[in-house]
Image (tube, rainbow, N blue to C red; front, side):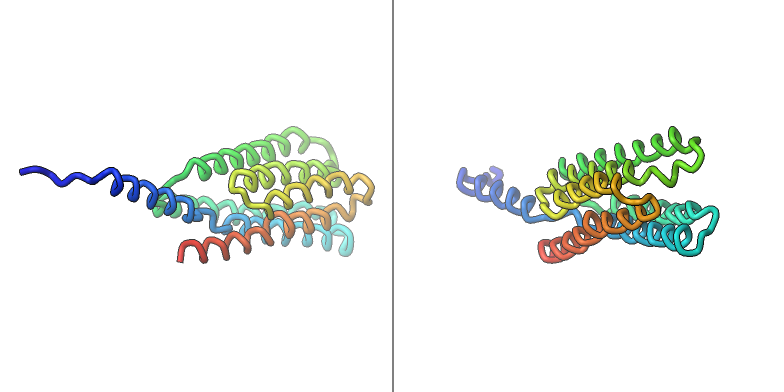
Length: 196
């Protein structure tokens, strides 16, 4: 009994269909950009209020709340990994970009964390670091709002050198709105539209 074989035209149609499906499938739903955007916005505004308005002696403690987001993110990534049908090269690259960012932030915190009161002056570096994975993710995804968000982070990093350090946390707030929150909602809308 002879198995049915596809003609060249049918094979080509199947391949084209698969390529189009892969092109139209948006796997980035913006969820983590939104999570971290809102968490960092809350912490940076909270820091400003505690430090500048209430004059609390340890305003940096508010950043400890971000550990809740880390726990949520780990569960979210585990669930996403199980549910993901296709893992693209772009997904993998973006994953490595953000792992590099986390390592940079962690090591940077360890290295400079021993300097007394450094938390008051580290925001220019934080803004500089925020720009790197945002810009690279935008480039990999070919998504301009993330590219612009990364550039805005770098511009704010430069601006922070001319702004009193008490207002640096407000620059962080502007950065995450432009780099993560707005692009996150745009990615979410694009994801829903492409995958509905």
